[in-house]
Length: 158
Image (cartoon, helix red, strand yellow):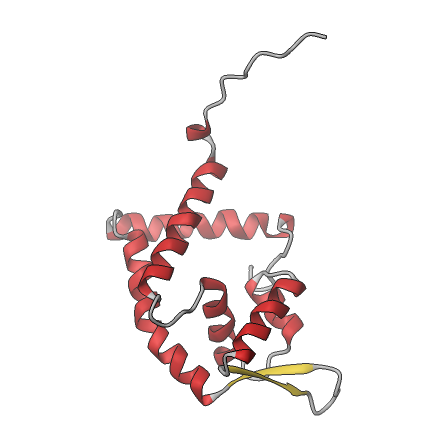
């Protein structure tokens, strides 16, 4: 059997490689900035979404922040155990659990926002203002156009 020769493909030429690296860097900066609060990027997304849409159900939360149902369940479980989020039965359908921030959750989110914004600034710090705007515009195009290909598509994508 004949072995194929290496293709000579460089990972440095692959967008997926840089997207993965940027994700690693982004998470690292986020965790560093919010270390005192003990909030992960996914937990922050859940808290902010519940704050923006009080009473959102867990399925809708998952679709909004582009997570699979089991990951969302684990995130909600941990936030509920921490006392910052609570599940309540929906009045119209007792099987549906709506999500609400507790007073502690509202305080945690208020404490987290300045550090989260600092993390976002730090991520984009190497770019000029114009480059930041263009980078965000291009990222939105790539994400929105490929949303349906995700293992957990976001309904928030346009």
